[in-house]
Length: 245
Image (cartoon, rainbow, N blue to C red; front, side):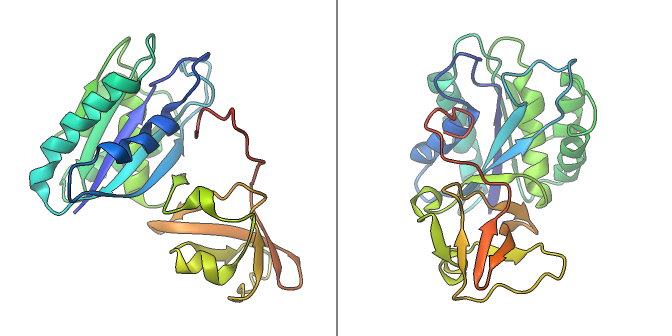
């Protein structure tokens, strides 16, 4: 059973870590039998009317659990994790829903809305319905981003992975075959969209962040020469990137 756990607003502008790092750390707190499939960062609307730390992003941990009996334990451990690692002065929020939740479609619609216009805590509470939604300090505005993170990730067509298998352990230049063996699909977005061959080499620029497309990790690439590809929208590694850790 797949479970989506959204976190948001766990940091402040001068914090040494962001929500992305907090969510990645949650893998160490999973109950026995549960595994982390991935962590997906979601970009929400940037608007002067919305208070946010730096980018107005939230993140969702996607967990594979053996059955529904572990949902309550995942909630309690996520709450403890926020209380332990969130920064004083922040406005943390938590949302959890399983793929079998009949109200998940409402969260998906809410997540998409959060990328287009300003919403309220009341909107988030209504969208969450039977899903778990809770605030853990400050204004509790984090429930908005947490709910949006679950909805957008569950949609299967939004966000980028900040954790997936050995994401940070791959070399800068890697073959298409090696990426696809790690369940990362490589897709050309050139005009003519040729298919990258297994032996072709992808330059990740040291920042491998697949997109969540079709409910799977997909790395968009453009041609950089014969049998060579560049990953799209990369940036150099930055040890001070608190948003993703």
